[in-house]
Length: 199
Image (tube, rainbow, N blue to C red):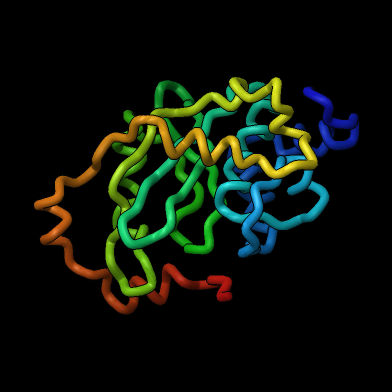
């Protein structure tokens, strides 16, 4: 694969499945630095945040013979979220790194990307308990950045989040719906923050 060493390639291929990739990410500590590391950097640093986890998962999906797609979620009053997506038998699943318990893996049971995005809605909240997910993007094929060595670069990959900022997103809720949303209950907030990394 593109510029990975044989050892790095073996490591990625040893993850074998999307769920294997998720288990690898779940074993990494979440970090809060303002970085945009490549999958190679994640392999060597053994830590990642949301964006880096999604990009790593896309590279690992490619290593096991799947296309390297990511999807961007936009939020209101909260940080955005990025995940790697894959299809099995026509249904969408996702691999993701998150500081929130419920915003990680999704089994490939979702018929559409909207169904997949909606599966995150109730568990996507900010620290005030506001349900904050608003839009999702179409899948972005990271092979478009192969000439920029996105899988192995030692430089931060800011060109990927910059691209996500300018592509079209589809709204999940209307402004009128958003005004009527209730806050997440205390027990759900507590469950969502299990293992949460604080500043």
